[in-house]
Length: 252
Length: 255
Image (cartoon, rainbow over all chains, first blue to last red; front, top):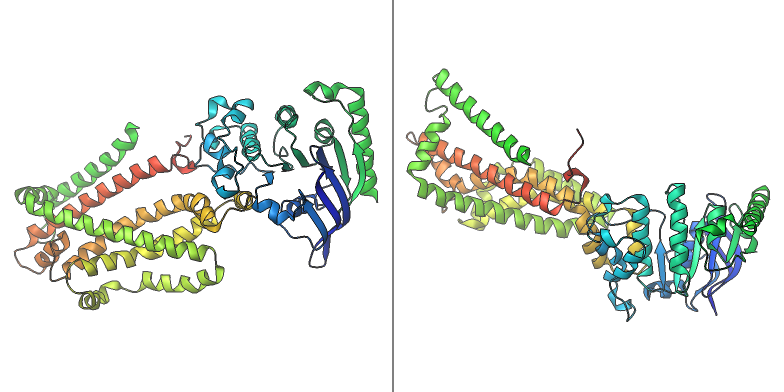
């Protein structure tokens, strides 16, 4: 079954067309990246899928339902660009923020995300406050906060954009480890070719506004993936392929 | 830590010493200004009376402040979610601030009768504008990303208010409280004094002010009010450090 289905989806703000008619299916359990130039409407598309913005035309199905319903049932977990941790909550309390609201929609097996915090190496910082953490650690809390929902769809909007390169590659490894074997579907928006290829099963290359998918590249690197995957010739080849598609889209 | 306790004490001691020294050095006439030492002597002599009166005044000010805060949170939460209402209410709140309330206190006393009523009403009213402004500004200071995050799991309005907007308003509310404590004490003192049936420091003080033999009593109440103010600020600072330890303004600054 497809987790996300878009049929002739369009989105415009007044006269400004942000998303061209776009049709696309994302399979359950796959990791799909969307890469494209700044301001190409990727974030708008993500917001439509997350049910935070209504489509202007066409149809969107998340888990077979309208995005607004998926949102009401906590079927979509978001990781925003800024970690957005609440400064008055400890790491532990921040990681369960999304479980603390709209409780009636919590999954029956909802538990404190302590195990997840340990898994991402924050076991010694459970009672720390956000201002005591580095940027990478804060984003790890944001990741746990989203995964704690046990939602079938994880939507990430340039989550590592504000981090330095060393931390980013560390986050890539953590994310791969967390997602593999959990069966969760991930829609990942990024500016980074390396990130898209290292993480994804599929990379969608988006054109400048109005946004559309100009290339759909399958990433056939084996899983589970470690950080070493970035040394493989196939990885380098795929990066080149994405880069060419991206440049082609900008010249269009 | 020691600096935090020591510095205010040094400030107060220096101020009192300067006051005492000036009164003695220039031989200020007793009905114009008393030295702190003579006010303290008088306070000590009638300590049980003044302690009772100070307790009443502290209660008036504290309850008035809490009523004001409760009303401000209610009003502020509504205004923070509606720009039109906020713009419509702002001039009214400024009116409350600028109109000299001393002029209409007598009417309020007639309206609400003698006793605690007019004191609490005036304290709550005078402190309201600063609390409402602080609530609105604080609740608006929430990061859009955090709002969106809660929206992404369909959090309700009340949940967003309680989990996000209210804690975000705490820092500005404390700043307003710091300002309002002085206002509340001064208002309490004056309204107690313009009341026929009361026990507070203001009742003693304002009556003493119109009596030819009341200077000792008057200056004793002034001194007692000052001490109430210092105690109130100390309590507030402690609460602020405890509750807002996560806030940048509370962390030690690099020098």
